[in-house]
Image 1 (tube, rainbow, N blue to C red):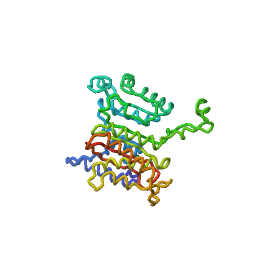
Image 2 (tube, helix red, strand yellow):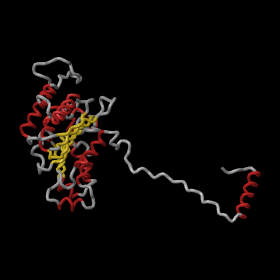
Image 3 (tube, rainbow, N blue to C red):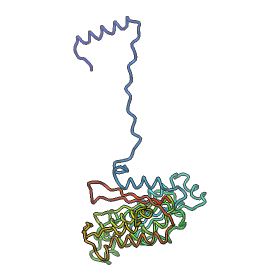
Image 4 (tube, rainbow, N blue to C red):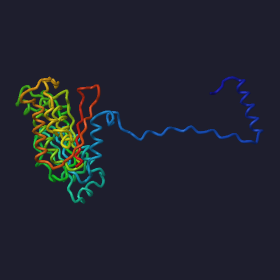
Length: 323
């Protein structure tokens, strides 16, 4: 601290003169260390510990084999996930064209959405961010339902990831800002009404599980707040994949037989019904396909990533085929 008193000034002058007369040097002052900036430059929403989307991206990056895999974004929406996937599949932008053409397998990114608006948004995003050779030679955008996937990949032996972000198109406009073509279809049309359906979703993720290579990942973001039945079906199906190799008596059949009957709110009503609930029926049919059409001895590790204390928040459901 600087002193303003004359007494202190005299004291300081006295000290200076005595120091000058003293040949012994004063020890140098220690410099204060400035803290180094943290290496993690992710934003709050980009932190895998905070949001399921960031966690999904982290898992995708650890799974994808660059310049080798076939990747399917089955709900490409506005193209944000598709662009992230493209950068994971073709990570070195300067050398990506040469790397992609030099591999024995032909890597492919496939984006699917039933809405033309979603496909156009995704195309614009990818074209503005990627080399044109990568876009035109290695990326396929399909305006169609994701229900049937078996004939979609160019190489069905190298599918490393199939991902879904269920629900409706983010930021979708209402009737007032849509085209006249859409308006003429229905006077009450809203893009939010065009959202993923339980029956087509379960068929699609069943196809996905049949396509994935060993080490491949199924990633599904569900929204219990907008479609609870769909969320429940996805969760039980993925858990059923893990139960294919259970040593418990009755095997996976006993697991699906124990799926409760849910009421319209997704609660277990506690009553035994003769024909069983919709969730149990759809999951049973899907797992039967996986068993009958899939590889013998297939083994899965599955996880449910959900925010505690926030029951209507998005839920990330993942399944990795390890054998």
